[in-house]
Length: 394
Image (cartoon, rainbow, N blue to C red):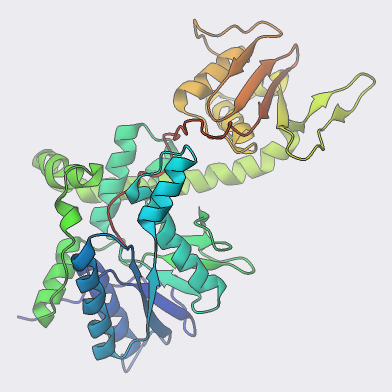
C-alpha cells in the first residue's frame, strides 16, 4: 500500500520565490527536499518556485560529516537540484569565544553559524527564503525544554513557522503575517505540523535512504534526553502530548503577538528617555558608548493591571538590550513598590544591580533603568526565554 504524502504548509511559499531547502542528510531534511521537488513538478497546483538546496558542513564529526556531504551532493545531483555547500568553522568560533570570556558551546556555535550561512544566501540574492525541516516533534521537544527552564510566553511559543532574517547575522524575529520587510528574507518551516514518523514512512515508501547523525543519540544534549526519556514517559499519561505541546506553542505565539501590538501602542506613552532635569525636560546622554537609560512613571505603572505592568517593565529593559528573568522582573516591581521582596527596598534612592549590565534606581516618581555593556570577560548569563542550543537540525 502506498504511503500517504506528508502535507507541506504552503502558506509562506509563493509562486516565483527562490526557495532554498536546508538539507543535512537526515530523514526530515531529505523528506523536505523530496516533497518540495515533487510539489514543484505537479501538473496542477505546482509550487512554481525556483528550488535549490544548501548543506552546511560544520567541520565536526570527521569522516561522518564528509559522508553526509557526499550523500547530499548525490541526492541533489539525482534530483537535478542546484546545491550550495557552506563550510562553518565551529571549532574555531568556540575557541575564539572562550578566549573572549564567553561561554558559547559547540551546539550554540553550530546553530549560529548555520543561520548566518542561511542569512548570507538571502542577503547575496541566492534565495528569498530558506526552508528548514523542523517537525511537530521538534516543536514539542522545544516547548518542553522551554517549560523546564521557566520560559516566558515568548519562549513557550517555540519554533515559529516563519521568521524574518535581516542582514547576515542570526537576528531572527517571529512575524505575524510572514511578510518580510525591505532587504529581508525568511526562514520557513513548512513541516512544523508533520510528525517525524510520517516523514520516515514516506521515505521508506519511496525506497529513499537517509543519514543518521550519531550525535542525535548523545545524551549529553538536553534535547536528546527529552526525546529519548522524558517524552516517552509523558506519552504514558497523554498519548497526544506532542500535539498538546505544539498547540500550546501556537496559543503562546498568538498571545505574544497580541501583547506586542498592545505594547507598541502603550510604550511610547509611558517610556521616558534619560533623567528629568531642573526646570523641566529630560537629559539624554549622547556620549559615544555611554549607557542608555529609560524611566517609567510610578503613577502610570500603578494604573496598569499586574500582567501589563510586568510586560511594560520587561519591555523597558528590553529597549536597553537586557532580557529579564522572572526573579529580576519581580525584584524590579518590588523596587517600584508593587509586590514584596525581603531583599529589595522600595524607598526613594534605593537601587538594584541586575545581570547583563542592567541597573535600576527608584526616585520619588520614577523607576529608572540604565544599561552598560558588561566588562570583557564577564560571564554571560542567559535569560530563561533565550533558545537552548541543540544538536544539528536544519
